[in-house]
Picture 1 (tube, rainbow, N blue to C red):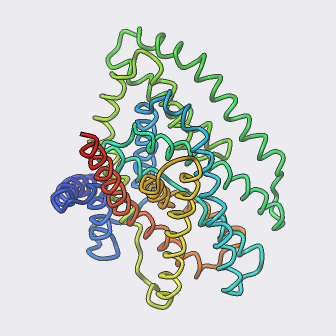
Picture 2 (spheres, rainbow, N blue to C red):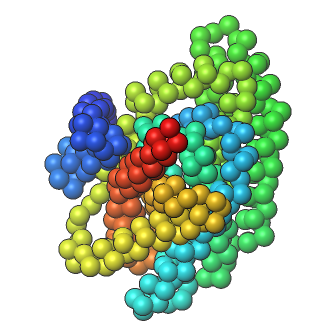
Picture 3 (tube, helix red, strand yellow):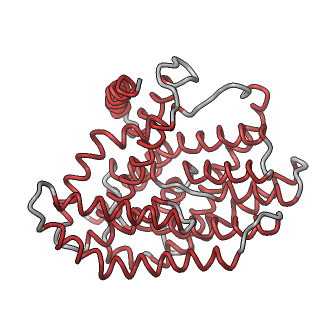
Length: 387
């Protein structure tokens, strides 16, 4: 029953998050793990349903919307070059080594390329929450991570469209690229002209909470437009958040959307990730799961870190950025579903990769805690030495 599920999820996620903080780990890790405990994998109290997935989708959209609202646009402009390096390197390394792994596993060439593409995907929704908890979302590293995720998403989707056209799928590569370009052009134009106008007009309506309602309308509209164009909905929500942050309604919207999101939708999103875990058939492919998980973690961690290092970050900060790019999240799961439908991914490999994606999601907050802690200690030591 949905009502019972909501009560259990909200209570369990808050308690698990608190316990995780007491153990000096990010709260999000506890929320992910409690989902595994509550789900079919262990206790079976919560089952994955379409309604739960829809609520979860709203949660991740709102989370990225908040990230956009809290983005420092001046810092965002300054880190554009760094984001490009991180995003590009974060695609090249997993793609190349993932393709190599596919060839070693005797996969056909196109199937091996698809494996590399899937491992190239990044979803920073988990990273955003960890950055917020550590107070790093507005830092140079945090802004670079968010920009790199957008670039990563666009590159992977275009490459996927190209691969699908080669594999005989009914895909027009030129049309796919045109839709992506059109989306960003329309989003920027609407953000520049439409967002301020809509916020002002709707704020004058003689009903309650018009400002936050206007913001949510724009958030979901941008998310839908992004999804329609073949870009992840979270990118649209993030862009909407950035443009609303440039209006005079930023603080009111941020405060009220955070209340709605963190009270209900975001805990459901994090816990639902854990609920999706399925250990059935895992033992038969345990070795492959371990190897692909290590490959997935290492290629993003070091690939993105090298990109950040080239962009001028020191190694500690570069590794912190790389850690935030490790999670494949819902973006990789969507790509995996496309691969299974098109025959580029066998049912057995689908099972393996779903677990690999979930493992990368679980380890991301732990890695971020480790590297951002080292970075903070190094920064504090530098201040002490100067004194």
